Structure formats: structure tokens, C-alpha cells
Amino acid sequence: MKRLSHALIVALLRTLSVLPYKFVARLGMVIGTVLYALPSRRKHIVQVNLRLCFPEKNSRELQKLAIAHFRHVIRSYLERGIQWFGSAQAIRDIVQIESKIDLDDASAPPTIFMGFHFVGIEVGCMLYSTHLPVASLYTRMSSTALCDLAKRQRGRFGAEMIERATSARKIVELLRSGKPVMLAADMDQGVDNSVFVPFFGVPACTLTVVSRLARLGRARVVPFVTEVLPNYQGYKLTIFEPLADFPSGNEVADARRMNAFLEEQVVKFPEQYYWVHRRFKHRPPGMASVY
Image 1: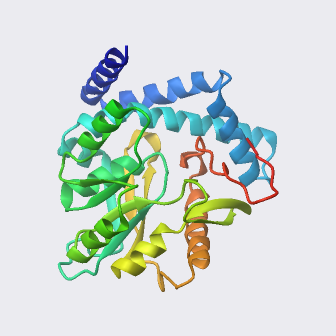
Image 2 (image 1 turned 135 degrees about the vertical axis):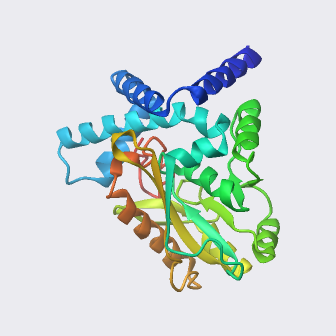
């Protein structure tokens, strides 16, 4: 049964990869609308996250935002077809890039590209890998077959895929060798190697790995965000200036800066942030679960 399910997923994604992009995007939005109308655990998580992070919004505004987010999430799942099985040119055709740094600078210092879990993060990473060498950290999925598929397809343009649980030494070696490393540290991965700092005023369990790797690898930290453009025009990958004075030597202060930068981006297109994740899964001692 697992093999059949996997084969069906692959067949579906391959089919979606050859269909017109705008058709797939619109289909995802329609399915997302339908699925939001059904009771689900993920729907509950989205509603809790939005209520915590946007207490100033009324119930109607929160409902509108939640529906818009569900549409974007389901759309992003369908667009995995072109992202995992489309050609490099097909990806370039739907993603614009704007960089505040010179990506072709041969003398650039070691670089950590710090991403965030907006719905477009994957296609932005893949676009970069069609242009330049890069290593990318990933988190292992519960399904071995699906994880292997994702790893293979995400790395098919030359990106070196590295499991997040690998030793920091290997990542530092890559940085010092001159290969940029892409990672995202904005999800709750547990209290180990994390600190509680505010995210929209709510204590959020936040990884300290970015500042630690930057210190060990003597690397600059360059944030990037991939935005879904309106009217089904594709995506825009924005690569920002390196964070100044980062790492600071204080991991708590660095985590606060990461979350503050992320907040600035979220308010620009809040429906595109990954609210289906239990961002506040772990709570400081004495604080009740919110889910």
C-alpha cells in the first residue's frame, strides 16, 4: 500500500509539472478553499497561530486571513510538481530574483543564506541552485520514500543536500571552503539548542544554530524571502543585505533579531507564512499549551 501511495504521488506530481503553471496555481487555490471548509487539525493550528500573533484583528479579519493561507499552502503543494520535476528553465520562467549582494563575487566571504518558511521558500532555493553552487539543510520526513524523493529532486540541479541532524563540523567545513549554505531556523524544533524569544509578542522556541554556525564558520548571514506574486505571475526571490554585527556573541539577542526581521517580512504578506506549523508547540515553563 505504501509503494502504491508513493507511486501515485510521483505520478500526480509529474502530471502537474507539465500542466500550465497558472492552471495548477488556480487549482490549488480552489482546493484550498474547499479543504478549509472541512474540520481539520491543521485548520485549528492556523486559527490558533493567527489569533496569538494578530490579537488586534477581529474574527472576520482572522477568518479571511486563515482562508487565504490555506489556499496558498495547498497551492504550494500542487506546485511541487514543477518544483520537483520541472526543468531549470521552467523554474527560471516563474521566479524573479532581486539581490542586494553580488552573487557572482568570487571573493565573497563564507555565507549562510537564512531563509524563512513562507510557502515559496522551496522554489526560491531551487532557483538559486540553478545558478550557483550551494548546500541546503533539510529535515528528514516521516516517510523514507517521500524524503528520499524530495532530497533527490531538490538537489537535481547540483545543490548538496545535508540533513539538519548532521554534525556542525561538516557545515562549517563547507562554509570555510567557500560553498554557501542555505538553512531556515524559524520553526519549533524543540528546546535543545533553542531559546524562548518573542515572535509577534508570543514566546517562541527559536533555534540558535544560525548564530553558532556563523561564528564557527566566520560567515556572514544573508536573509532571503520568496514571495508569491499576485495574479499568478509566479514568485520573487529577494536576497537582502547581510545582517550587520551578526553574530553578536549573544545567542539570545541574535535569536531576537532573527524573529524581528521575520516579523517585518510577515506583515508584508501574512497569508504566505507557514501558519500550519505549530510555531508555539513548546512553551516556557509554567505556560499552558495553546493547541
